[in-house]
Image: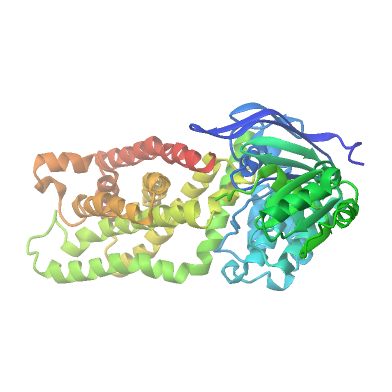
Length: 312
Length: 258
């Protein structure tokens, strides 16, 4: 289905500069109709800059960016009419009720309150906010505010929904609710573009990912394909007692190891063949006391690619 | 939909947003914008007025200051909303940022703000007018033209306040504008005494400021002292509206489309 999807957003050599700072350094990508496309990267990787450019919220410094067949920055109004934008901060209107928030926003798209009201009620139900429709926004929890922003972005039935870190700061229940809503939208054919630094979110929602750091593309592909290609299928985490044991284990595992890495005080060995590392360690009588064997995941890919330096 | 239609439809949507927000707090808002000029009118007009023995340009002191206070009420209603609330809409609660995720453009948002501020100016001016009327201080039917300068105040005083709100880095910086621009203008623009009694170098500055012409025009209309000076006042206010209207657009664009 994704292969069949026509490209809706195409970027070539996209650059974003803020004065001397280069936030995005010439990246290429193509987002197809009906897919969920994720930008994954640590803080300051250039995700938000990219998504702000394709939302026509920030001018393109250099390169080409086509959104729905129109050049971003030139056809701003016509592009925004067809995009649903969920920004990172929950900028719902604190002086209005939930329902008014949706009706006012719809009016910005030229929808009269009469046509917008049934749609607003339907979306409040979809986001499980219908019981609060006349409440003041000030009384809402963080999760509710985020759901309201998403409902608002859907008022004009956009073809593409763009979300900048949709679940950052939400509790697990609220996060699940948002994920469920996004999956339902995708089933209905909405193209979804999101940024995230949550691996679980990217793994669950995204059909294809762009892993970015320092404004550059590190990797691209589907989550499963990236995991398989970069870190193999199995991770063995070992808590060694000393450096000598680290040496011994690494030697014993030998060729079974595709890649090794340190996560804090743990040594992580990655392998394409499940079980091989364990077998080798037992054969060489080098199995440590504390060891965890688990399937690889996107987090392994992410940490391998972007390193372990703290980003603030 | 033609471009002009789309523009004004968007501006009206912004107006509607502000109206819905205002409707939640209208009682306290009217009280706050009304208490100060009413106090001035009563305390100064009745209290100080008793000691001002000579008539001011042929009318009582109360009569003299009422039209000016009406103009000031309108100016403050516009300035406070554009300055403080405009600052919040830009910085604290993301109202403008949210508008930018829709097809609205900055000029449309600014036009919507002007429509709204013109509404506020008329509304708060009207409330004060009722009091002035009740005191029997309206002496001419020419007063029906008063809404014209009041509506223009929606641009004349909203534009600089929005500009300051867009440039201010903190809430506190807004106070510079209020205490260094608005308050002196209020004190010197002929609300409490005729400007021609001031030294010429101060008077000439005052004549070039918009509030003076608003006060002078309001007084002329309320007292029925119609002359070419009224037209001159109106032209000054119109000129200010035209020259200032674009002022906040660039500053807001810089903040909203980085």
